[in-house]
Length: 635
Image (cartoon, rainbow, N blue to C red; front, side, top):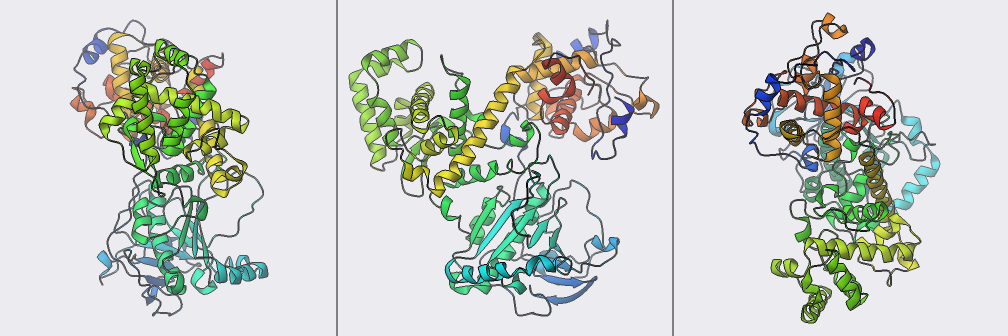
């Protein structure tokens, strides 16, 4: 590791020490690694793309609202400026909110009031929150009042007029958006609330005083960041519940119609259900899963991120649910289009091909792609006996499809879906095995691409909406619903294309025997996909960093001079190892010691660090440089 990277003050976690393209481990590959790698690797995996996704929960504890000005409570009950009677009545749990004056010394940024379970109690001592710590469910929401500083942002006459119009003909609305880091001219209005990266909240304009009917919440993020933190998600849940209560109080005639426009999937589904918030009109016909997918893709919009880091897209779409290898003749474009379609539908994670889901309109959708009866019927009607024989010969359909009686029953199955009947598990297994689903999806997608002029986003939008190439029309494509879906579908298509590009650029050799088993186990424990590309990347890093010698220690670089020498297969320094080592117990369960020179433990820590620091193993500097024809660069 270079001195510059070791000293980088902005990093919240220690950097991995780097030995570089050295030969210090040559001739030492035998006994140590063989002894460790020969141990039984028996623990259960964690190789799921959603494992790394942050849990979003809303507190169920009741809390009242405490308003604090310069550290002194001035009112209770949820109102500002003594409006003590403004205590919203709603079905969701109440939340403890601490309002703080805008002009206080820096030390006053600590929490100044905290009560347990909403009951009266003594104020706790101010204490700073540990960076990166998950926000406790019972922790009160802290709101720093900065309305004086931003008052000029809310005095626009046009906004006042628009507000009056909103009150007359639109339901109350809460808009949650992620900060625009794209560098493009800002078009959005000043938010009423800003959720800081540590979960604290600033109030730039008091929506109660302003009589705002459209309350804007902005979630802060740094350039290059895509996803909100766990603290931000927890704080936004509580804030949205409180704002909803305020809007219900201010607009009682529309208390059951408050809309949540969650532009980034920040608010948990639990909070949405507890508060009764409604989706925007353009999403009202979408399933909760599709709405979630649409909102998640918006995190990449205006993020200012670079190269669409894989770590930022792990929870998006449905990339991890494809169980069938690419079929003969399936191009990159078709494969990416399939991912966009499946990603919008978002099938059940554990059993994607067995998914049976009822839409808000009462229609049943089935399989990884959410086929409806019309789509299955359309596909079947496009086939000739010769085409069926060819698909069977290529392994794309089971032999049962050559039987006319089976085809007649398949047609009845499609009609059953069209009539709104729910298929049985036995029918799903009989008529829609995995390979058949991939074949059907490929044909429907190919036809839809022709109908949309190869518009990947609109093709995905039409297919997830139950359209076929024959029923796709301009009226649908021009609708707000289709535009919303198309934008999300294009993002998922681009993510899939980027992943294909990264995978195709994978370099290095695949290790064999014990080494491969060790890398596969480490990827599994680290929660990363066990793919050839990832295995090659890890092997490349280990070959250059330690020459596969688990006992090697770097005693000459800047880290060694500081007393924290790089060690082990991936040459981690002790602070980095401790920050990223396995805490699930899987390393020990596999018969290894969770120490820095243990080969499995070191691989897990190095892999987790690489994903955290660079977004993916393929994006580690040395791996990326080799993929582009350059030399290995220490990481």
